Length: 251
Image (cartoon, rainbow, N blue to C red; front, side, top):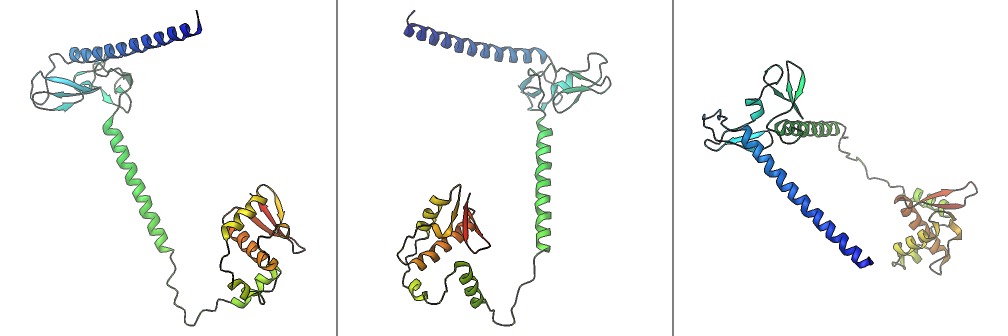
């Protein structure tokens, strides 16, 4: 057979297989409801006494006459060994006398789904979560500090900050303040991209990074400012060696 003939034969086989699967599923659904009709035949409704019960789903039926709903397994079925009434567990029916699992005549599937149980569990879970949130709010409210009301003007210590920056950057702040003020077009993103392209996965000497502006001192300040913000953002780490040299460690 040629390749195209083989492909066509496979496609026909797959189509036939899907058709058989669909027909089997339809047959199983008909068998399900036929079994339900048989096991509920001449069973009386506990609400009105009529023989009008029909299954809504596995392990749950409704009376067409009065609308009463119930679990037919608990109502009509007993233990095959001791004839005791059954109880419902999370996933099965149980004989409390024999202490054994009993297969329900009114449940076509292997597992029993107790909707009321899971609804109750979800309600309790939500209640516990709300309680934890409220306890956390109360705890956080108790740890808040009292409002700060200064009794004198605050001193931000700008002169000390100048000195710290001078020691880190290595260039006196005084002398080029006017130059910075005359250049409002400091492009932080440009410096971030420039530095990030050099330090990714390696260690770079801060002084070895090429300048982006002609003024060497101003470019050093711009580089340092960008590096500080990148360190805060977790893009790199700034380390100052014992000899004063600054190294940038990429992530």
